[in-house]
Length: 118
Ligand SMILES: [Zn+2]
Image 1 (tube, rainbow, N blue to C red):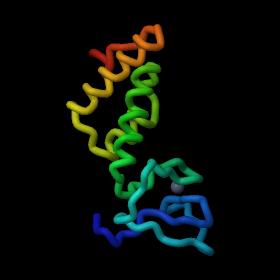
Image 2 (cartoon, rainbow, N blue to C red; image 1 turned 180 degrees about the horizontal axis):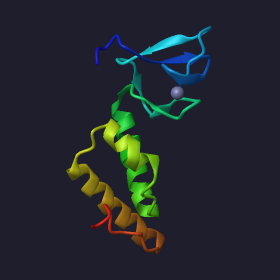
Image 3 (cartoon, helix red, strand yellow; image 1 turned 45 degrees about the vertical axis):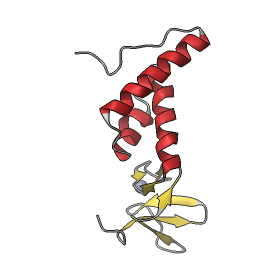
């Protein structure tokens, strides 16, 4: 993907993917545009794959740790955002450790193991 590729459109404060954007009154979002949090199309919920900032990496790591902690394997953090920031196995391990620490602090049992064992 090139920096100048259009990956979505903004209409006022609402974001759309290329397929769902209305034709009028829209501003392009380019692949090079940076974001602190993941953005999804307002219509079909597809991830708009902007360039993640360092804040976005932290945001996704926190969301992944929370999803693991809550046993939410269907969470968008695990199914989509992890791939978006190309989270390494090492970072996932740290998220699992953080989830376990949080679980101890909250005095609840996390629904581990994660990832699911086959
Ligand atoms: Zn869409």
